[in-house]
Length: 76
Image 1 (tube, rainbow, N blue to C red):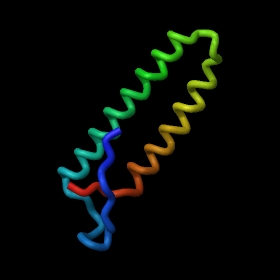
Image 2 (image 1 turned 90 degrees about the horizontal axis):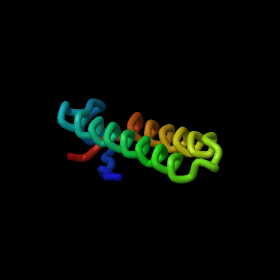
Image 3 (image 1 turned 30 degrees about the vertical axis):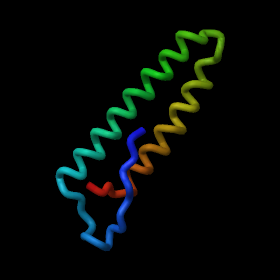
């Protein structure tokens, strides 16, 4: 996953620039799509593994990524 460094929100204000917002949104969406593809591929390659194992890991990762997306600001 491509990670952007985080800066202190007190340095430049509370709001992201439009470019920063779209860069982080693109990172979030592309990583989300890659994770879905990965879990679908794993489910196809290992059909004996219960689906809840993959969904549990996927949901935990999505919550983690969402928390990063919601509470951190990228540095451009």
